[in-house]
Length: 529
Image (cartoon, rainbow, N blue to C red; front, side):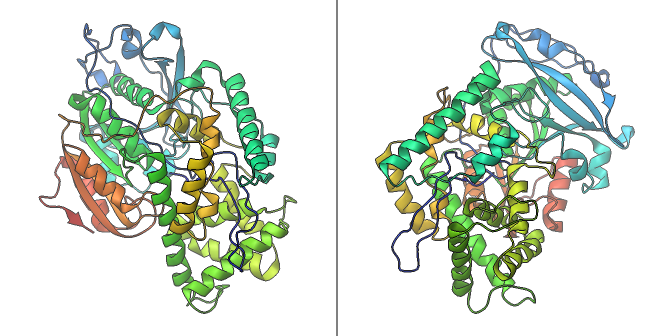
C-alpha cells in the first residue's frame, strides 16, 4: 500500500485555506494506495486437460482453461542468480480470455528448501504495492524466516505482470519523473484543474504509447490467474501463499477464483475489497494522521527530537515546516530542491515502520534546524523507487496502471471537491495531499474491469488474515472486514504500530504463522498478540 501523492499544501495559520498543490496522479512508487476489486467467479473453465508439471517430479492434475494448455505445461529453466537464489522466467498469456493475442513473461526468484527431506512445497510471496517487486526483495526478507519454514518451502518471489523484471509497464523516462515530482498544480481553480487533467492525459498517453496492449491487461484478476500458472509449473497441487498489503487483495482474488487449489494462505495487513475509492482514501488519510500523532508523541521525550511541548504543538511545528517548504523549497546535497510535495512523501514513508522513525527524526531535525532537505528527500526517493544514480524502478507507473484497471474513480469536479472537504476533516495534516488524484484514472485509456465488492472465496480452506491495530496504511478495520468476508477467514491481531505484522519482531505473531505454514493449524479462537 502506498499513500496517494496528489499533493496540496496545508491550511495557513489564520485558518483560511492557502494555495494547494495537486499531483496529477494517485500514488507513487513504493508506498501507494492499494486497489479494490470485485469478487470473480471461482474455478476453471470447462473442457479442461490434464497436464504433468515437470518440477520435483510431481504430477499435477488441474482444470486448464482451453487454449492455455501450453502455458500450464511449460518447463522452467532455473539459473543461479545470487548466493543461494535461482531465477527463471514464466510465459503467461497477455489476455487470459484470448490466449492467441500474445504472451508476456513473469520473473521468478526462488530460494530452494534448505532440507529436501523436509520440503513441503513452494511458498509464493507478494510484498504489495501494487507495483512492488518480489524478485528484488525475497532474499533479504527470507533471511528472517524461521529455519523450519526455510526447510519446508522453496520460497519464491515474483514480479506480477507489468512490474519490475517481468514484462513491464513503461511510461516516462527518469528526467520526466524528476520533473513530475517537482511540479505543482493548484486544483481548486478551474484553470488549475484543467491543467491537472491535461497533465494526466499526457501521462496516460505516454503510458499507452510506451507500454502497448499490456497496459489494459495488468488488472488483479489477470494477475491472480497468472498465479495459477505459477502454481502448476512449480509442480504444486495447491498454492501456498503469503501476501502483504495489496498482496492480500491478490491472494483473496486467487482464492475466490480457484478455491479448490488454495492451500495455506497468509494475508497480512489486509485490504477491504468492499470499499469504494472514497472510503479507502478517507480511511487511509485518517490512519496516517493517527500514525503521525503517535510518532510525535514518541519523539517528544527523546534527545534530538526537533519538537517541544504537546503532541498538538509538535504537529503544528510540522505544519509550519511544510508551509516554509511550500514558500521556499529546501536545498539538498544533490542539488535537487526539496518541494513541499516531496517533503510530505518523506514524512509518510517512514511512518510505515517504527523501526526507522529515528531516521525521520534526524531528517526533520536537519530540515527544521539547518534548513537542509537532504534527509526528507532521501525518504521521498525511497518512496518513489528512485535510486542513488537517479534511475527509477517502474513501481510508480505499474501502480497507476493496475490501480486504474481495478476500480472506478469518480473524477467529477463536484465529487472531488466534496471528498476534499471530508479529507480535511479526516486528516488535518495530510488531507490536502490526498485529494483530486482521481483525474489520473479519469484520463486513463482503459476502462476499469472491476468494482468494489466483498470477497468470500467460498469453498477455499482456512485463510489466516493478519491485522495490526496501529497499521499505518491498511487500517486494522480492513483486516477485520476481510476476515469476516472470507468463508474460511481467521483473524490474527498484532497490537502495535506499523504496516504489516509478520517478521516485524512480534514473537507471538511469528510463531502463529510459522505453525500454520508448517502444520496447517490455526488457533482455536481469535488470537491477539
